[in-house]
Every structure is written in structure tokens, then in C-alpha cells.
Amino acid sequence: MVSAALRPVETISPRHASRRMEPGRTEIELRDVSVSYAAGKEGVKTVLSKLNLKVAAGEFVVVLGETGCGKSTLLRLILGQEFPTAGAVEVDSKSVTCIDARCGYVPQKYSLFPDRTVLGNVMYGPENAKGRYLSRLRPSFFAFRRKLRAEAQAHLVRMGLRAQDMNKYPHQLSGGMQQRVAIAQALLMNPPVLLLDEAFSALDPSTRASLQEQLRQVWLESKPTVVFVTHNTSEALLLGTRLILLRRHSDGRAGETNLALDMQIPPSTLPLSMRARSVEFQELLEQVKELAYKSSSMNTDDADSPVDEVTPA
Ligand SMILES: Nc1ncnc2c1ncn2[C@@H]1O[C@H](COP(=O)(O)OP(=O)(O)OP(=O)(O)O)[C@@H](O)[C@H]1O
Ligand SMILES: [Mg+2]
Image (cartoon, rainbow, N blue to C red; front, side, top):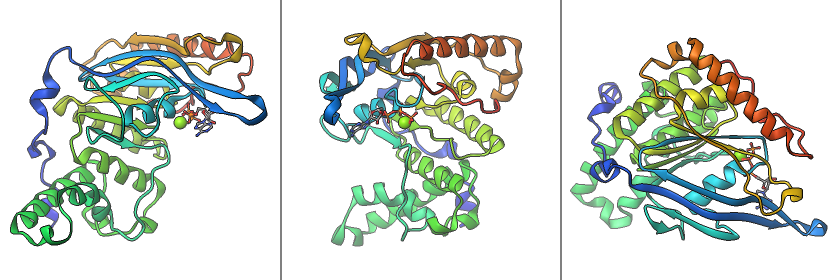
């Protein structure tokens, strides 16, 4: 069991590998997307407005913005858990009409099955998709399950869980450990699209830094298209290839987009911890924080900072 858990992750075969490598292919597209909710006496509350976004396969898009500006809503639209009031959302050139198996998702409020162990939770989705009832008695299912188990263990180890954690139940785990199980769950299927909503928010700075490195490694190895929501500007600039800044929709600017900034992040081959300490990075960080501050202070009803001042990785 321990040796399987420590199997190197590199041996996990990247599914959909050739498709995801097609250069320049658009993976995610939002055209003139708006999302509004009925809001009682106030009439209608617009969260996203006139959002246009084209994400190429293999991009690592980080999304920043003040609380309530629609970051989680944006991820749910791409996932197919929510639909726009106006406009179109496409993944892999197909209109999003339901939750798509192409997307691995770590929600802001994740939940684990309380009656399943760590391993059982991570394996649940693929196991269920593969077979139910009598088909589970076939020898091919046992072989599938063995392989899946080894892959699940490898992802959990990668997320910093130990062999002795695999058979624990969620109530025996800290919040940060539960969050890492949820990330392993999303990584297990090696999805072409990874949607991560504040996936590292429950982690202490050193675990967070280590998981940032792991996520970067996953991205370098199998090049999924990533949309990563965070309040941590430093984390965003370290991980992403492109930064999107949303500002909260203001009724005073009805019809305007709330996409405040869309910029490419200069690439770097340095380990993240070294990069975080470089002068160029610190300058970039200051510039983006300034832009984020200006963009949020343009909102008359603004009350919150767009970013958490969390220790850089
Ligand atoms: N189902 C819903 N009905 C009504 N309003 C909603 C619904 N879902 C979201 N909202 C509102 O939409 C706005 C944007 O929510 P969203 O969760 O996308 O923000 P966010 O940018 O992720 O914020 P945070 O940084 O706090 O996570 C919020 O004001 C929220 O109250
Ligand atoms: Mg959110």
C-alpha cells in the first residue's frame, strides 16, 4: 500500500493529451455574457455584465477581484452549473448546457462524503462513472479499480497527504487536509480544464507554497487549461500565464463590462520561491496591486479590498 502511494505521479498517463496540445485551440469562450438575479424590491442585481473572454487551450488564467464581483459565478458558468442571463458560454467550441466531464472543479465550498475515507472520496467519481451494480463484478472493473487506487494515492501524496491519512474519514481531517483531498479529487481524472476556486485558501503559508509548486508541476506536465480564482495577488502572478481582474458591477455603469484588466504575465522558469523574491516580480506585484486598488475604488459602493495581503510564496 505504501509503495503504491509513493508511485511517482509522472507515470500517470495524460488523458486527452494530443487534443489538449493543439496549438492555439480555443478551450473556453464567453461572448457578451451577463448574469443577473431577481433581487426583491431592488428589482434585478447584475453580477456579470458584457463579459467577453477567449481562453486558449493550455493557458493558466488567474482571476482576481473584490469579493462579490462574480469570480465564482464565472467558474460555475464554465462548469455548466449555472447559465448566463444573456450571451454564450462555450467549452471546446460546444455550448455549455450541463456539467461537463471535461472540467475538474474545486468549489469555494467543497464537501466530502462523510461516510467515505479519503481514498474513497477521491475515487468516487471515476468509480461511479465506470460501472455500477453487476458490472462491478467483472474482472476488468477490479483491474480498473486497482489502477485508479494507485493514481488516487499518488495524487494524494502529491498534495502532501501521508499513507496513514488515506483511510481516514473527513471528520478526522483538518480543514486544510480536506481542501487538499478536494484538489486531488479534481486532478485524478486529469481533466483538460481545471477550475479552482480559492483552492488554497485554507492552507498555512508553507503548505500553500508547496501546493503552488505542485500545481505548477501538474500544469507543466499535462498542460490543462486552468482558471484559478484567488484573492492573493502574489499567488496569481506566480502561477498564472494570464491575469483577469474583475470589478464589481455598478448599476451606475449599466451595460459596461466588469472585466477591468486582462494581461499576460511574463513567463519565468525560476522555482516559485525564488521568483517571488526577485526585484522584477516585486515590481510587477506592486503595479498589479495598484491597478486592482484603482479598479475597486472606481466602484461607489466598494467596501472591500480586492486582494488579501497574504505572505507571498
Ligand atoms: N443564486 C444567487 N442568487 C442571487 N444572488 C447571487 C446568487 N449567486 C450569487 N449571487 C450574488 O452574486 C454576487 C457574486 O457572487 P460570487 O460568488 O460570484 O462572487 P465572488 O467574486 O466569488 O466573491 P468572493 O470573493 O466573496 O468569493 C454576490 O453578490 C452574490 O450574492
Ligand atoms: Mg467566490
